[in-house]
Length: 292
Image (tube, rainbow, N blue to C red):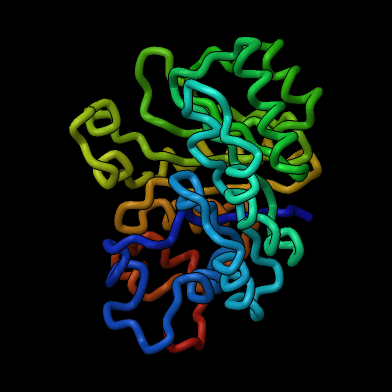
């Protein structure tokens, strides 16, 4: 049976109001239980920018009593992956890692995502850094995301496989040296992350975050990724599918469509999304919940 974990990267987006979430949110509304009715995972972006407290993670767990299979991927701190100097101190790592503890204890931490910038290359220094990060995180599944095509070398993939590290298959705008779409599994956990293909904004230094991730996958592109996901699903182990092209809920729309294609199961699509993405009508299974 396919062990598919799918969902968006992040959930706090102002532009989702009236497009994913209700325009008028009822008292006590929180995005996590709302999303848990149509997806079973979120890829947490906020931890990339700053440490979050254990209390924050405890609250997430408490909100998901009705979704026992819901899991999290936590994105590693940018100081681990994007810094040019030494790694954070032991005390700093302990502070950052506290968000992982309640999720591990609740059985809801699927992996830590270690995302390296385009400038990172598969040299000895970067490989040593990856292993040090893994050791400092105290175990568990580690998924490594790279942006440059040099990481497709056989010896580099062999390194990841030998160390039990998951290679993250990405979809990103293509330019010189860009890692192309792949279907590679180097560890029991397979990972796919969709960023969109908005090349004009992606390579524009003045473009903002929303513009870079403003991309809607069409039928032909979804068909491409269905084929790759089926190849990954042919081997046993969890399969993670994340939509990071968040603007206006476009990444969420893509993963819902792909999850339906992979499993054949219908999903309760939020009503606002059905209005904005009518192509999701064949995916939709009516849900009695009033928030939908």
